[in-house]
Amino acid sequence: MSTSTPEPVAHVEKVYVAGSSLELDRAERMIAALERAGIVVTSTWTIAVRDAGTGNPANATREQRAQWTITDLAQVRAAELFLFLVPPRDVATRGAWTEAGYALAKNKVCVFAGDTKQSIFSALAYEYETDAAALALILRLADRDPSTAIAFGSIAG
Image 1 (cartoon, rainbow, N blue to C red):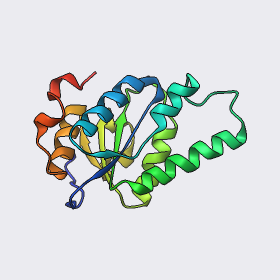
Image 2: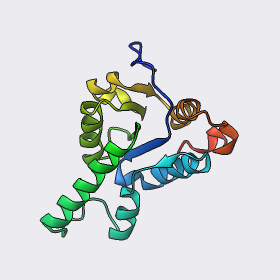
Image 3: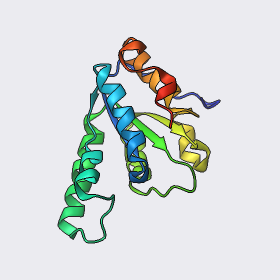
């Protein structure tokens, strides 16, 4: 976690999971772990990416792109906590960084896991090197038993 800890948070029931569409399996593992623990995951972008066969399809219409944006931002607003699975620097992601900025602007509790030092804005979130550590925090904030999710070691990937 960063040396400058964000404000303490209230009880968490709903989480938005953001990440790179190039790391879809990673996001889906985290979503599954949260759902097994009884936490509501508001984000559905992983389903949209699976349906489209890719993230940010080049042949998407302006209307499709606008609708995906409206949906994602509404789902960020619906969550109490925003979790960003920050990819390594060599893995492209654009939308998740935008969603992170939106979550910060909306004063959401933000948790970033991964290569968080790529942006100064990560310092405004709880920062963790591993997905497992971020998951552990979220489960504590949601008053969930970690054993209901998964063994933490198996979520990293």
